[in-house]
Structure formats: C-alpha cells, structure tokens
Image (cartoon, rainbow, N blue to C red; front, top):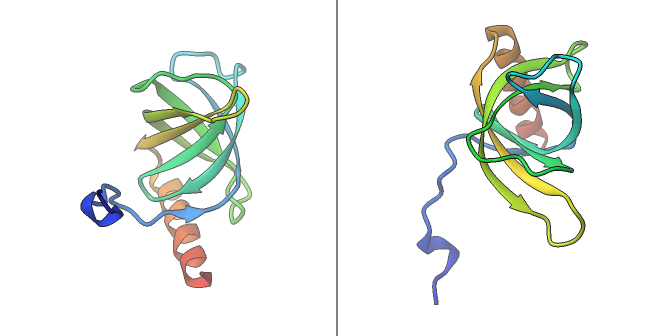
Length: 120
C-alpha cells in the first residue's frame, strides 16, 4: 500500500484556501461572454476553480479574479492544467495555471497570499 509520502509534491507555490468570485471566458471569445465561477484556492502560479461546465485541458482562458484586497479585479491569461468532475451534480474543479498578467496584478496576488499565509 502506498502512502501520501510516496508521491512527490508537484506544487511549486504555496496555496491559500479561499473563496473568491472569478469570471472567465475563452481567450478568443468576446469580452461580454463571461461565465461566473468560484475559486477554491489560489497561489502565485494558479487557481483552482469550481465551474458549471466542462473545460478541456490546455484551454486558454482570460480570468478576472475579485481579490478582497483590491478595488479592481486581477486580470490574467491562463491555461487549464487539469479537470476533475465533482462526484455529485454537474460541477467540475479546474486547475488553472497563470500564463500572463500585468506586474501590478501579480504583486496583488503575491501580497494577498503572503498576508493570508501569516494569518494561518
């Protein structure tokens, strides 16, 4: 029987469990075709989302994340790294890797994670 310690940790960044409002759309879709989602956790490198539709791995998305510490949402181009169907209902958890974002937004995420980590 394998234990958790038999599997190496693949995450590069510290994750903070948090629920935030996120809007997303496909990178080639019009800006008025956004869909709402909820974050489950976030790190400097990506976010885990709870969504109501299947999204294929490697799909590129534009995310707008409502950070509690910022008056305007963080905007980031990202790529779907993994998808997992929830056991009940028609929801999916989606792991999204950040690809490109303004330095100011990256600092906002970094600051939020740092402050949240100190509270834990």
